[in-house]
Each structure stands twice: as C-alpha cells, then as structure tokens.
Image (cartoon, rainbow, N blue to C red; front, side, top):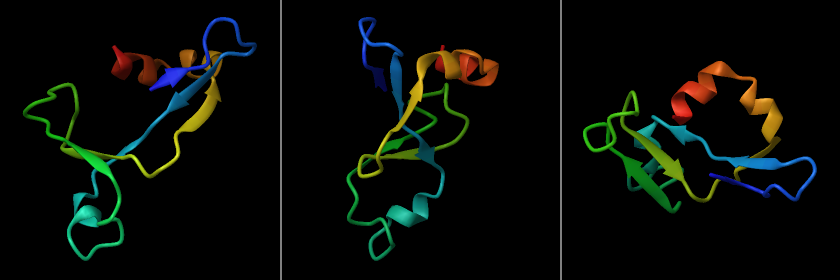
Length: 78
C-alpha cells in the first residue's frame, strides 16, 4: 500500500490484506458497518478470487527488506 520513503531507516512498508470471507460484509454480519472495497476477479484478473479490502483494518508495518526476501509476495506484487 505504501512505505515511509527512501530517507527513513529502515524503510517501513505498510501492507494491507484482503479477505475472501465476503459474507462477513453482508448486512447484519460482523463487518457490515466496515468501510470496504470489493475486488472482483473479473475486473482485476491478477487476483485469484473475489475478495474485500477492509479499510477499517489497520495495515501491517514491516521492514521493506523483509518482504523483498519473500518470492511469493514479490511475484504477486508485480
């Protein structure tokens, strides 16, 4: 989602996650009041499934070098 920039040491990346539990966002469900964005696989084909980005969940802060070493994450980020 973003990072603290090149002048920060270490550079901290802010990563957001998505969920495929779409039913959690339906009216009357536990996350129904959360601000969210539905990502449809038909519109965004680089996603494996339909999923939701929950804006009310805090992003994870990790050192940028940490996720650069994760080949699966790099592959999906491209």
